[in-house]
Amino acid sequence: MRRPLRRTSALNVVLLLYWLCCLAPSPVSSITVTTPPEVHASKGDTVTLSCSFTSTSRPTSRMTVDWSYRPQSGGPPMMFLHFSSRAYPPTEGQFGGRIRWQGTPARGDASISLINATLNDNGTFTCTVRNPPDVHGSTTSHTVLTVTPRVPSIRFSDVAVLLFFILLPSAVITLILIGRMMCPKKERNQSKAHRSPIEVTEGDEYGIPGYTHKEDRAKCRDLYVMVRVQNFYKAINNLLRHVCEIHFT
Picture 1: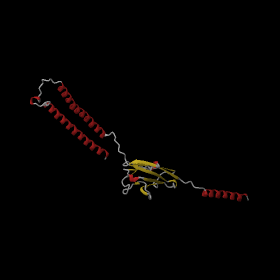
Picture 2: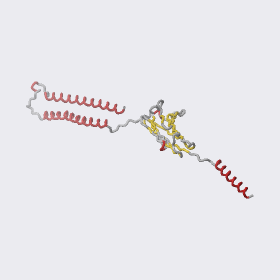
Picture 3: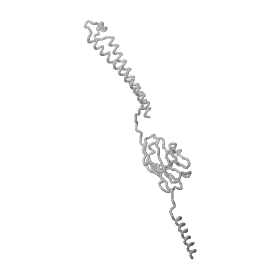
Picture 4: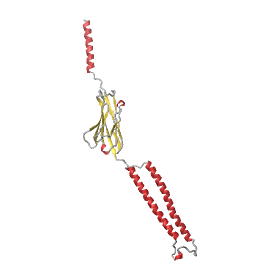
């Protein structure tokens, strides 16, 4: 009687272990995808849309990455990039030729870059990563992109250096010309104030008081200098306008 009891108890233990193995929850792998909540950029920038993931399973050829976009004005999301062993960026449409794959799946990176961002790119970008057998967890993450117009700014560049070397000599030349215009007038006024009563000038011989050929030549020289200064300033203004148009366009 003891042997059948021992066999029955052993059989019951085996059945109990079998049912425990069948009914126990199997360990399920999980995945977590992370992206920055917001990204800000200026018009014309190259924007990096980061996406990282952690998986309990090593990435294999079965792993896939999908990037989709939903406009700020609303509407259904649109998938524009698919990765499966290799990246398939868009060749047409809104993002045609402007998406570059930057990810390294072996390191848990599924990032992309958006070239020449425009105001029409404002919206929500979604990164979705699947890595079987990881079927549970947070497989998607969202990033809101905000693109603003670029604010014109003057930077110390080659153009600024060129303008500096143009304006500095022009200022020096202008001061010299103004000095030449002012100094002869003072000399003439002083010589006229100390002239002897019996001194006969070239103009007095002909009965024209206060008239001399020297003053006539001085006035012509001053007028010539003024015209040269005006032409010089016009040339500088045209050059600066042309340089600024090139710099800000």
